[in-house]
Image (cartoon, rainbow, N blue to C red; front, side):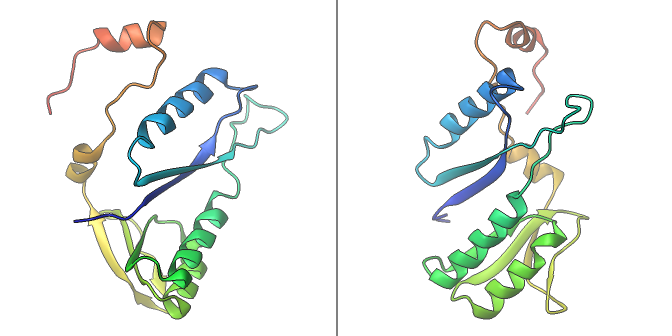
Length: 161
């Protein structure tokens, strides 16, 4: 099967607040985007005034994903646009993409998860199992080499695959 593009959207830790995690995210993006079919889009995490007592949050990722799904469907540059999410906030974007777009719209998500609906009907949905997760899990360590965490990880027993 030929996948045109895989787009990943996620929050980016702040270099000021979480320099270690920021570095991990940068190394992960660098590795993933070595494959020309992968695009990683970050939005800065929002840090509340009492951080780290209250964790940072992703803000605007769902809106960006929704805009992207609609844009891709309207452009018609892909035969199929697949959204892997259970987020009900994305249903209006799925509805618009399915009604007005030139691409077929499908969804994917974990077995047992909520399946998004469009105009009361289900789109084609691929349910992913725990075995699917194990098969595609990124097992690479993005910790800086020589860091105490990387050394501890290197000494840990390796799971059977």
